[in-house]
Amino acid sequence: MNYVGAVYRPPSEARSLILQATVGCSHNRCTFCHMYKDDNFRLKPLADILADLEQAARHRYPYKRLFIADGDALIMPTQSLVAIMEKAKQVLPLLERIGIYASPISIRTKSDEELRLLKKHGLDIAYLGLESGDDVVLKQVCKGSTAKEILRDAQRLKTADILLSVTLISGLGGKERLKEHALHSAQILSEMDPDYLGLLTLHLSKETPIFKEVQEGRLTLLSPSDVLDELDILIRHLHVSNMVFRSNHASNYWALSGDLPQDKELLLEEIKKARSGLKERRSEWMRAL
Image 1 (cartoon, rainbow, N blue to C red):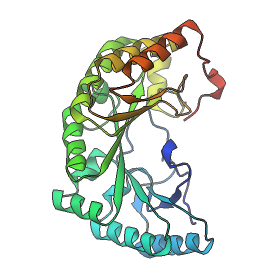
Image 2 (image 1 turned 180 degrees about the vertical axis):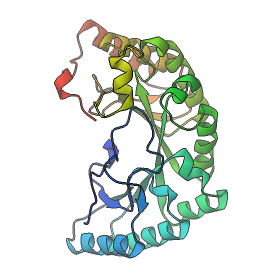
Image 3 (image 1 turned 30 degrees about the vertical axis):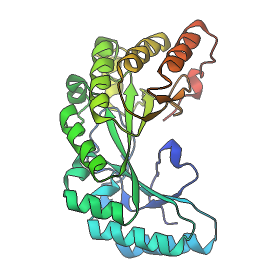
Image 4 (image 1 turned 135 degrees about the vertical axis):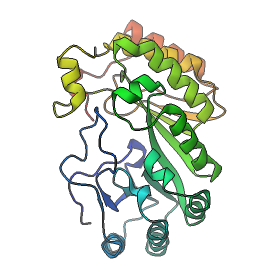
């Protein structure tokens, strides 16, 4: 596989074949993100991508999942994505699921018909970063979209019957907007009703603009106790039909999991255990992005 730079994938794609179709992220302006800073965003040549698939197939590893990277691969031309997925199904006979990172920008480059076409040719799940449901926070971190705009983008994926996995970042509003970040995120997520929600916790990198905000006192990082307060508000105000919740990312202090709404009380009990010290907390030095 001919990877360029660092390649990232969601925790749930740990056993997947990671196929790099784009280099970097087309937006690449979020103040909290340190990824994809070494290379300018670009599409890799389709011939190179298909050759990578053929190379992977020669190893005869029984891949059941394929993840199309980098940070915004959905922005590729639809026919290129179709060609990639058709090739993957041809050379990886055990393939069961294809996933991709999506962004508000990339979703908007696709018509409803194109999204349905991608689903028809094998796109099963898309990973979308909401980060926060609070427009003040989204503006502060230069997300480039409002919560309602991201909601509409997410709904278009769901209408195309593509599974929706959403990420949210705990602590992104600091102590200053802890309650607003939690409440507004719960509201948008309840409207969005994603299939999966992955929770990350803000982890500073010195290369990011948000690090400077914290250094200058314009943003106050949440303590582990504050993180639990924010999570408690979020879980209590989430009203979804059938959603898998995970906080198993390396940035989190605690690994929590459950299915909502049925496990809401169990998750709230886990938060109580964490608060009382009965649930082990990940040490600061072990947290990473």
